[in-house]
Image 1 (cartoon, rainbow, N blue to C red):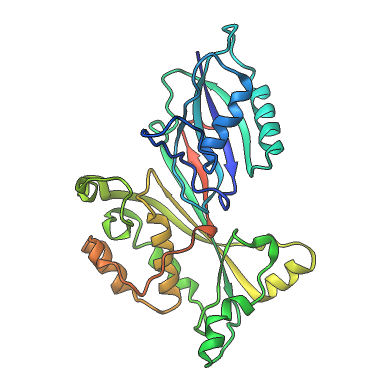
Image 2: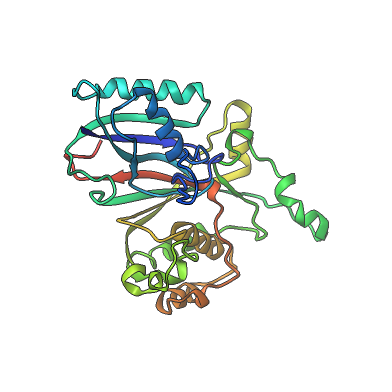
Length: 312
């Protein structure tokens, strides 16, 4: 039996999330609506002697993408020899491509039996992409107001890849966003910034679970992924910004809530005092409902970090 670390990337639009669903009351079946289930199905082409059980380093929800995530799996070859890692990568990608699945294995590595892709991770970096309209359409018509986001130009290449913000304000204050982002850096009880957990039990609201340290948040100029003439129009229409957030671990929907808060700050819907109160009075009741949860389409798991000997 040998353990392999798979470095993977995927577009999460069509998946319910990365993690498979296991229903103990039903007969065992592969959950092909999840990234994990599709990977386990693809691994069956190797016909290992053992049952295939992948382990995830990170969980992402429906619509969230990954530029780099990791999975480990134990495989026992019938002749007792380890699988060639290049062959594993190539055959898995060919199998996934045949099924037209937006998942790719970046590389495969043989690791020690004691290695655990989740517990040995020392950090994770998330990227959130926003595009802010330079000249938001102005209208007093309530019907037109509802359709504003649909009337605006959005490059087809970036549908479900970026959050396009049609701000109602004449300007989006990116410097205020940069300053506000630093309020989140460091150790805080992020209970206010956690959506209701899918895990049962009141103990998940205890500070021992909701205390997290944000290592850094960087707000950087982004760029359009559009092509040809679409790129020209996109750059004329929008300012692109990349929000990078790095920490060892995150709470359920914490990143999307932080980004939603920063967007509300830059748009003028809330002020810094609001952020301070949500951080210093950690409670689900402290959440300011003028803030909208940032949609999943703009979020990417950018990197899972390991110490040098395991990082690829």
